[in-house]
Amino acid sequence: MIKKSIFLTVIILSLLTLQAKPRKKTSENLPLHNTKWVLKEVFETPVFRNPDTAFIVFYDNFTFSGNLGCNTFFGEYSYRKKRMKLDYLGATKKLCTNMNVEEQFLKAIKYDITHYIIEKNKLYLLNNLVVICKFESN
Image (cartoon, rainbow, N blue to C red; front, top):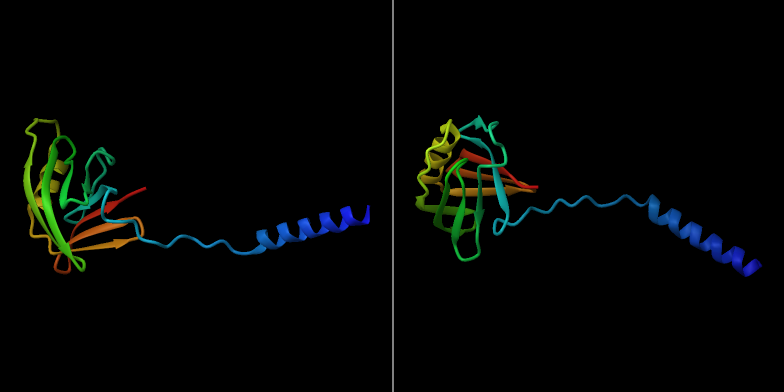
């Protein structure tokens, strides 16, 4: 009986000790590759219409693809030490209603992207110090 009481006390104290320790929040950045980066802002304009539609994914084989909001697009990229260069290769040509986000995102992809920054679940594509696009991933 005493052994059971001691055993239960040790278990309860162990559980209380584990529960009392603060849990670490993960502060790691998401990887650039194989992450779906959803467009949140382009040329300092927030994207509200179809917020999950416009996105980009960078692959390990130095290609990228995504959706401009209506049409899909693809290309190649190179990067080294946070420096980046995008080479837009093409997109589908569907005509959609309200092509504003589509046109701005396509312009940004074709723009001279020179750098990228990842902060946790956010990706920024920049031209020198100017943010061209902001993305988020879940």
